[in-house]
Image (cartoon, rainbow, N blue to C red; front, side):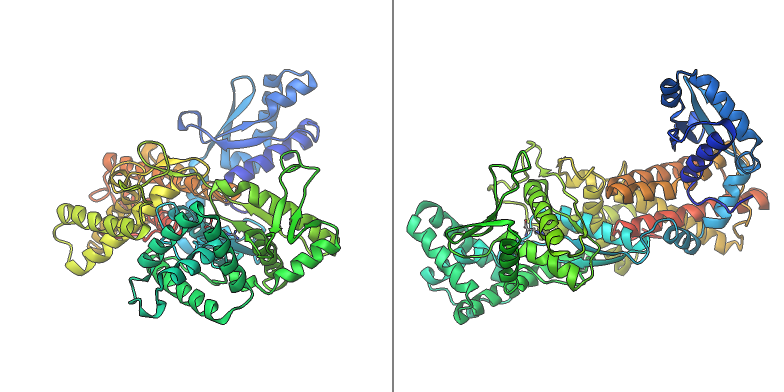
Length: 589
Ligand code: ARG
């Protein structure tokens, strides 16, 4: 027999395709697809025979029968699985208990699993820049900023797990229009930035900004003044640069508090302003390649071949010569390719920026091909809106966005209350750490478990619940296994090395474990963390029903050892999965 397949879905697709072509004379257009099946029908279902048969004008059930007979003759396949024809021409496939046992022995340990995962894709060493979080300076992070933070951090962990060289870059919005407005307002009100006490800066700046924004919306003169402020700043006026620097420091201080709390880190925090001296090259090259058109001071790229963008140019320089979001983003791609060696760039932002990124990607493609620069893979990993119960973007009662810092604080406080009630014996020190892990985990998981391209209704109560698809439910399942492990240690009993399931309950549990790589690879493929969340939730449920119906302690040594071993593999996977989501795994709570 060949080596033990890490990913059975892949193995089965390969094997069925091979046998069909080699032993049953199927054409090369036969592409079987295998997916995990509903447990009552087996472990996997193979499709593709139906459509192939229809194309050939041959009865699909007959073809499926032929294929089944050939598969049964293949010693590698039949040692691992059993199949039957079903419906109009599917194959239902079940793994043999021995194959499940062998897989668990080979990949059930955290280290073994990690090694196999790193070899399962071609991501090893691939340089991928992840652009996420990226709040705008001078404003507080609000609930909407949770998404980019949670999703970006999770994707970083996932890509690194599979061996990619991922680089986290926090592209702060620190060079845009808000500075013109803010600098003008500081001047009008005579505010001295140096006198702002540490820790309070951002509140003040935010209210000044809001006021200033109102004024530029009402008065064309104020708007012109704000524009002149921005141009003066971008031209390097020393006084304005000093204020700008102070504003950024005050802002980043408050962002850093949230990052620390959320356990999120960055390799680079360059920001839009980092590219202020590189935009000139961008303008020059776009003009030289005939991609951009000048109109007064403005510079625009037209994608006339593109339906939607025919009438909607990509503005890369404003009429007054100021650089904009598009200009710095273009310079950023160049820097990431030339200096960071990026082969791929992922942008994690909300879906309202889809047009911006589509136009950015089109422009980069034309520009880089004209110049002969290596073209990176560019992907916009966009997400939907966080809504209030009314279905609209979530706001406080006074109409302001809900602050992220306050959300984290109240999630941690509520977690502490729940824990005090559920487990009053937890020592105070540990309770604090556990409350933080539960509170922060609840928020992150609440976000990650939603399909990223959908909007979702925010409910802290639901996120913190110990029931249902929540972080606490997973953390609690892990803690229950932790208690089993501690008891086993106390009684000096050990997990068995042979984990071949012997009862229906053990089999169901083992089968769920074997599906872990498949869930991870699906998450990676689509860059959708909710797929991993869904798997971990099912695994926690499976453990729970296993533990409710099967005794561990008090069974004969062999049975006890096997069940203990299954629980240990589940704990390894739950802990690994939570870590990949950026959530602290708890072995006691
Ligand atoms: N600062 C932007 C915002 O708040 C997000 C930046 C995303 N990254 C980028 N390279 N454009 O919407």
